[in-house]
Length: 93
Image (cartoon, rainbow, N blue to C red; front, top):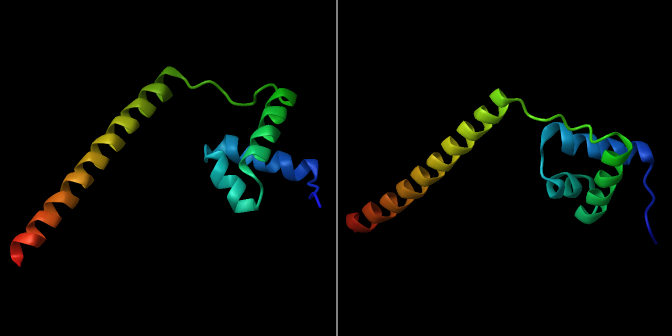
């Protein structure tokens, strides 16, 4: 039996994906909806609402790029520290 969802529910999930920038899969799983189903709702929502996502300003784009670079550096540092920890843990034995 197929479940039916109200348009209000569909719109609410679409707004959550758009406004919070959460991955579609995360929102779908949180609400017990299939990711592909939510993706289809999102396409229809954007068509109906003129693609309510606003373009990033130059400042926002620069900040995003800076944060992505910082995130990449921190991930690399974390990976290095994990390897170093494992190495020194072996040395202690």
